Image 1 (cartoon, one colour):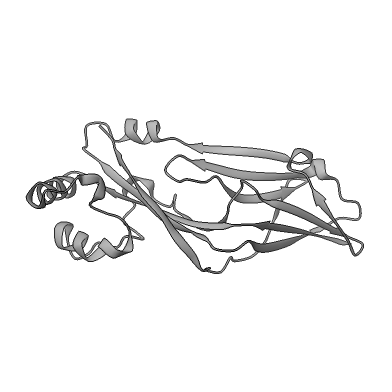
Image 2: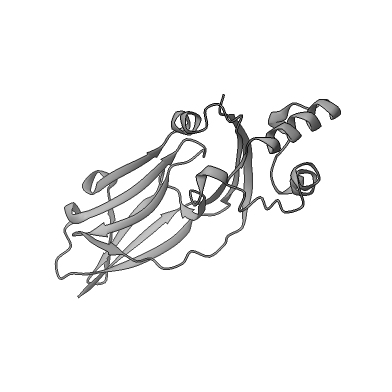
Length: 196
């Protein structure tokens, strides 16, 4: 028998744009020329054309992640404030976070700085969060649901303002909630980071 798990929370998408070496030098020169603080050089999608003029036409703000590779958080549920609902035999009940296992993976700014020491690397993080609470669900093939067998894996990436949910496992087996579609939302403030 399949037991349904529903997750009700806000969602986010986040990206890290990284520049290093000659790119950083070009940005610093530009900011000096126009008398602008470097932390305000890139504020999100509205500045993409300006960045292309400074660092090159090949710039794509959704793929220019440098040493971060695939650490962007695309269409993920936000952990804080999430609500978990279990549907068993047609009846729904709320499931407390305290009743399940939560494992956190940390991605630290200090580690990024250490990995980019001496490279004059800078980064901007930007993204948006959903306007509304969104629901996703997955099913567990079990006759008897045991909350202690459910593990939520979350990510705390210090470049982003929110912790987010990466995936679930039940009794060691991955739970599949399928693809999460894009959503309406507002951009949050862009943050600026330096490796030195």
